[in-house]
Structure formats: structure tokens, C-alpha cells
Length: 446
Image (cartoon, rainbow, N blue to C red; front, top):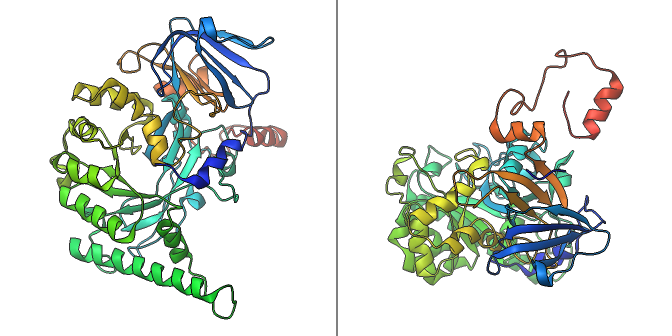
């Protein structure tokens, strides 16, 4: 154990240094380095400084800066931090029962940054996550792309856009989840009709703003939901779409083609039935790997071979946890199951990292070990596809956020009393006010 899909607007994020980035160079040497963007490097060297990767390569040709802190990782594996393209950590929620369409709801306003599910995701090697509201609505709200830094508040985890707003997508869904009693749709056809109607209103809203030409008397009253859909129409916000059955998948592609928005298909249980259609549409697919029967009827034809079939068709394929549907601590296992069912090893590892970064429009910043990218990486005890391998360390922007050798971190990794209780009764112990203030400042509970 060692101690101690692209959006131009997001490209500028690479210029934003991590809030907790280290200044002294750190060099990890001796490990098998899997950069994802290139071939594995035996006895490789990874050098990071000020939150960024400054060098990666073979030991013979990658000098270690004078004064660097050197970590000997001989016998270990180093790879990029994992990117989860669909998660529910932090307990965030979106829309309510008043409508099936809530483009104005922000999961940002509902996430508990101190929820232990975030530490558990760190224990699984996840460094970036697309945190979603649920799928019980046609549009359940705005998602949030988070760096899983150790933070006191949600602001410490945000990935800011150049205008200061937080990066994220729009969560949509179809199929049986959103079919309910009024005001929700009662059929699949009505579901699509409601979505189409709202996007047409967004087009009209955008056109009214354009025609107003800045005249305050002519500009329509602000509509928060339509504002978000205009971002979608203009390609500034990616639609992250829950869908299972092949006919539902085709409905999503039909709507995306009609309104010209960028979409990532999530779950795609029957994606293996329509791979050429998905590929022709240029849509990406974020797949969940479920290893036990059950769940909803529309996922009946789920197949482990879906990632392999889509990969062979030329689709950009990623994996996600849908935590807590599958546990964030077992995310590496998704790639292993994908390979077992015919996916290439290279594609499966990319599906945990660079492919998912592309689905979030963050691939210029994360997803591979390359000079200039964020210093997000993990150190593994062995092969990433082995059931016997553990995540030993997780680093975000050059700062270690998980170390299995530390007792509390190991507790998050393996479970047990104290690993999953974000709230404790104030009479459980007797502490001074100063102790409480210190714990709060450190993002802890007493």
C-alpha cells in the first residue's frame, strides 16, 4: 500500500485551477500507467503540479523535477480518475408532482455536499460525476457535473463555466417512468407530444427575444424553464436522456433530430436492437451493467452484450452507476462485465473515463492522463478489470481525497458503522462549541 461530446464553452474550464491544487510537484513512478489516450506504459512516470498533469511517459524519457515529492508505485496501476456519467449521489431531487415538465428545477439546489455517498464514490475511484434528478418526469430538471473534491458546501464541488455558472446537462426521460395519472401523460404518444409542444414554445421564446433586438419593452417576460430549453436548442446544454425500449430510443432520436439538440442515451437496455440507428444519429450511449434479474418490465430485454454491439457499430459508449442502483464503489466492475460480453478492453476502460468525459463535454479537461489536463487519477492494487483489485488512492486536481490505508477512508470503502450516517443526534456526545466549529470547517460531523 502506498502511503502518505464536446462543448466549446467548456474548453475554457481547463484554464481554471483547482481550488485545492498543490504547488509542489508530485511524481508517481514505477506503476503501469494506463493513460487511456495512448498505450499502457510499463514502469511509467506521472508528474503533477498545481492541479494539472505536467508530464506522463516512460521512466527513461520522463524526467522528475528537482524537489518533487516522489511516490513509488511499483507493482501498482495508475489510470485517470473515473467519470460517472449518471449518478444520484448527494440525495438530490428535481421536479415534483405538479407537472411532468420541470426544466427550471436545478439539482444544484437539492444536493447535500456532505452526504457520505460522495466519499463512497471517491472510494470507487470516481473523480467526476454527472449528478441527476430522478427519471419520474419527462423533464425532471438540470443535472450538475461535479468534481468529487472534499468540500464543505456544494460550491466547492462545482465545475464552473466561463460565465461563472455551473456545468451541467438536462435530464429527460420517457417510457413507463413518466406515465402516470394527470397532469402526467397516460401514454407514450402523449409523452412525446408534451415534450414536442414545450420545445416549440422554447423556439418561439427564442425568436421573440431575437426580434426584440434588445428592446426591453418587446422582450418577453423571463421564463426559467424556456431559458434552459433555449440553452439545449443552442447546444450549450446536453440532454441526458433516460430510455430503455428500442421504440423509446427511436422516439428520443426523432425528437433530437427534429429540434437539433445533442443527446446522450442513458441505460439503453434494448440498444442492441437498434445500434445502426443510434450510430447514424451520432448519439452517445451511457449503459448500466446490471448483473441480476428483476426491475422494471421495459428492461426485460437488457443484455450484457449491448456495449459490445454499440461499440462495434461505432457508437460512443460509456458506463454509469445510477448510484444507488449500482454501487459507486464497484464502478470498475462495469468495464469487466463489458469485456466479458465482448467489448474491447480499450473501449471498456475508455467507457469509464474518456468516453464519459466526452458525453459531458469535458474531454478537454478530464478523462485521460495527458499533459495540461486536470490531475485526476487513481492508484490501483492491480489490473482494473480484476475482481481482486482495490482502489488504493483517489486524487483530484493533485489532491488526495481517498486513501485506503487511512482508517476512515477504508471504512467508506468496505462499509460498517460510521460509514453511512450523514446526520447524528446533537446529544450523542458532549463537545465544546469550538469543537463544532472546527468540525464544520473541516466538513466533518461529530
